[in-house]
Length: 451
Ligand code: BGC
Image (cartoon, rainbow, N blue to C red; front, side, top):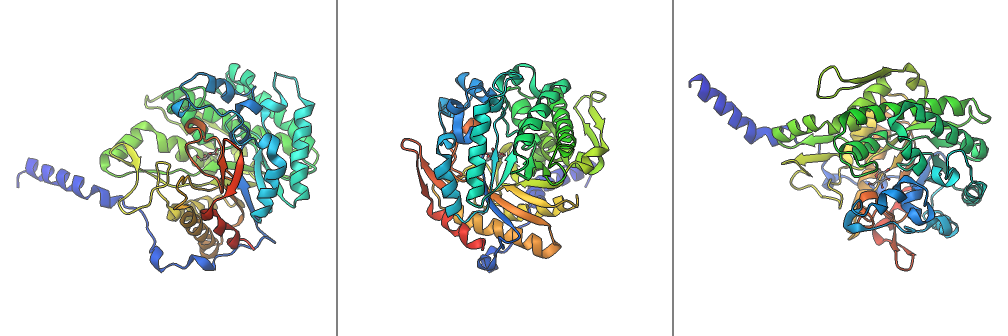
């Protein structure tokens, strides 16, 4: 065979066998009994996770950047608007009862910055009093609150100032966190300063699906990611010095969203698009080494900084895990025989197990701060819950993962960002015309896992 024919043959072989080379770990589910899995609530938090904008909408949160973003018209699927979403703001009393009825002893909620500080430097006592009522209601019901201070949303005035694009703006966020912590730290001990820096940057600065809607603004993406990581450290250091700071547990919240290419050309596309890189690699490298290095495609224009303090700025890691995305012919998908969720990824509990294993390296306690399925037909939810909780218990058993709690995303159907009400993540179905909540049959099984 001459050299050209040899190369062509190898290339052809590569194309044919490429998919199988990338095939991912798959367990023999037929032989696995998930019914034996239990978590003991005496030493484990079982909760649901919610976020204020998603649950209360632009009507209740008129001063946030998402309220402005929605008004642009074509930013949400089918021109939807959030309205009151599932109106948690006004229905929280009944909703806390729903949380109790699930058997939960915890709830991860967010405190909305734009409600507390609707205009720069003006703090709204009524909104602060509202959150006292919500948190008191939870405490009376025996529900431990875990508070997120930035869940993708901030005040419109902050957006106008350039939000996290500018390092000097971190000051405003720290000021808000300090105020909230001072108010609530005698009642709340678990804190999440920023939800998922990776997806925030991906959606807002690469895909353009979140405000400010920038598409493939690679340099800005690097800058914002850097500032979010700096903001996390600044908030951590500030809160720790306040009364109750030492007892408080302040975590870094990371969505572990790995992406894999199905064919070699998908892998190449992924590398060029930098998606996996922004979502996982850069962030985990920073947590590990204290070195942030966001490489742009043009050499010499990298965004870099070093801050070793990150290693001592996490009392726990909050792991949000949904799935691993397979890019197949440049579209998100899965392998043959896998079961898709309504989102563009499959049910993949094996990936959850692997993600926990990867996060264990940081030597910090872990909370699963989000995990759930979009399933409008409710015909995969039960399977999802059983498999993922099995994977979690296996991680604890196999390598002693120090997991302290599990928060299901989400309590009820809510406003799923750019997809509006299209995706149904709720354990409770919400009829948005009447606001009636009904526990889905596929969700019933979750109770049996927590005793
Ligand atoms: C976010 C949630 C979102 C969920 C499902 C997570 O990345 O924190 O706000 O609803 O994913 O897409």
